Image (cartoon, rainbow, N blue to C red; front, side, top):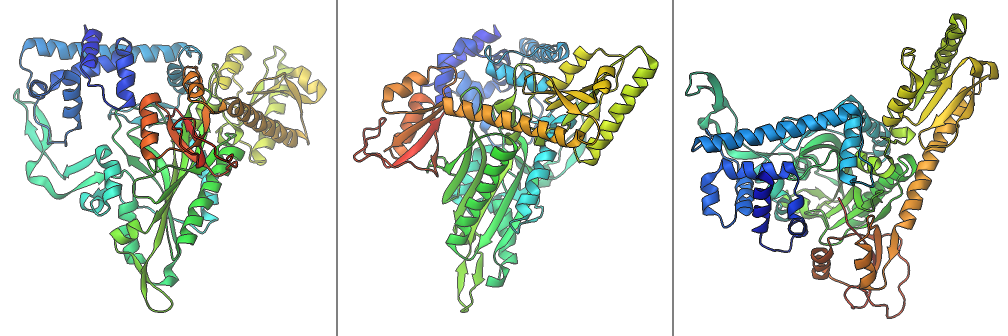
Length: 602
C-alpha cells in the first residue's frame, strides 16, 4: 500500500524541466521503500497542507521546504492516522535492522548489480560512518574520521606554504550578512538552516510528563543561518583587517564544518553537514587574485593525482555551474568507476563582488582608495567519496597508502611449536618497530586464535594497502611475504636492514598501480563526440564516462542539453586542443568556440 501511494503521488508530478523529476517519472514503480514511507509520512504530518495543494507529492515537498516555524504539538486527527504513522515508523525500523544485518553478515552488493547499494554496503562494511539522529547527517566513526585527518595532514602544509594562515570563524552567520551579496545568497537560500530562537523553556505535556519547548519570547530580531559557507562573515572581518596596501595580500584558511540542507544524501558525497577547508584571500590586483585561485587549484590537482592516485581534468566552470557570487570558478573533475563525474575541489576568483558588498577598500601607495580583489577555495569530505568510488572493489575498501590510517599490517603465523612461535613473534615485533621508526603507519595483528583467512579478509575489507606475513619458514629465508591490496602474487620483503626500504617501495607500487588503473579507466571512458547520436547512444551504457565536445552553445543550450540528457558541463579544460577551421558543435550546430567536458555527475 505504501509503495502504491508513492507511485500514485509520482504520477501527479507535473512534467517540468528537472532531470530528477524526469527520472522519477521514468521509474515510479522503482521508488525505494524508504522514499515511499517518507512520502507517506509527510502526507500524514500536515493534512491541511495537503488539502490546499494541487498534488500529494508536490504539496508535501512544498510543505517541507517552508520556513521553519517553532514546533508545536502534532495532533493526529484520528486513530487511523496514528496507526499509519506507527506503520511508517515500524517500516523504517525494519529497513534499518535489515541494513544492520547486512553489515553484520559482511555481504557487499557487487558493483555490477547495483552501484549505489555497493557504495553504501562498502561504507558500512568498512565501518566508516553511521546514521546520525539529525536528518541528512552522518556520524564519522574513527576509521572514517581518520581519512579526513590524513587529508588535513597532507593538505595543510601545502596551504601554509603559500603564505596562508589558519583561523576560525563562527558557525552562526546573521541573515542580514547574506542579504548584502544578492547573487551569493540566491545560490544558498534553499539550503540554509535558520536559527530563529535562542532559548528553551520547561513545559508539561497533557499527560503531566515534563518536557521542553521553544520559548516564544526568545525570538531573534536578526535570525542566523548555520554556516553554508563563510564568505560573508569573513568579508565582514576583512573590512576591519584591511586598511592599507601594507595589509595585502591577506590569506586566511579555516578547517570547519558547514550545513547545507540536502534532500538526497549519500555518505561523504552529499550530506547536510560536512567537513571542509575553506580559504579566503584579498589582493591588490585582479591578476594577483586570479593567479592565487589557479595556484590553489594546482595544489588540489597534485594532491588528487600524485598522492591520492586519482587523475583529474582541471578546468574552468561554465556560467551555469559557477559558484554563486564568483566571476570564475576553477575545478578538478574526477571520473569514478561507474563512469560518472565528481567535482573533487574548486577554487573561485570572486572579483570585487564581496569587497564591494562589504566595502573592503585599501589605501594605495598614492593615497587613493580601491576595492580589493578576492578568492575563495576549498575541498571537503567529498574527496573521500571520490577516492572510494575511484579505487574500491567488491571485496571492500581500497585506499592509496597516503590515505590509509594503517598502511601495513604484519601478521605472524600461528605455530604449535612454542619456540618457533616465540621467534616469529619476536621477528614481527622487530619489523613493526623498524617501520614505525620510519614513520610508516603499521599494525601488528598478533591474534593467534584466529585463522589467517578471516584476518586476510578483514584487513582487505578495511583497505590496508600492504600485508606482511611472517612464519617460521619466512624466518629461515630471511624475508616476510608481502601481498598488495591491488592484487598480484605474494612477494618477499627482506627482514633486517632492507625491510624499511623494500616496504616503502611496495607501498609506492600500490600507489602507482592505483593511479595507472584509474588513468586507464579515464582514457577508456573519455569519448570525443562528433555527432549527437554518439552522445545519446553512450548515455545508454552502464558507465557513460566523460564526453569531450567541441562546444558551440551558450548558457541556454547548456541548460537544454541537461534537461534532455541529464549531463552537465563539467568544465572547459585548461588544456585545449586547437579547433578545426569552421568546426561545428555536434549538439547545437553552431560554430565551436571551445572544447568542453560533459558528464553525468554526483
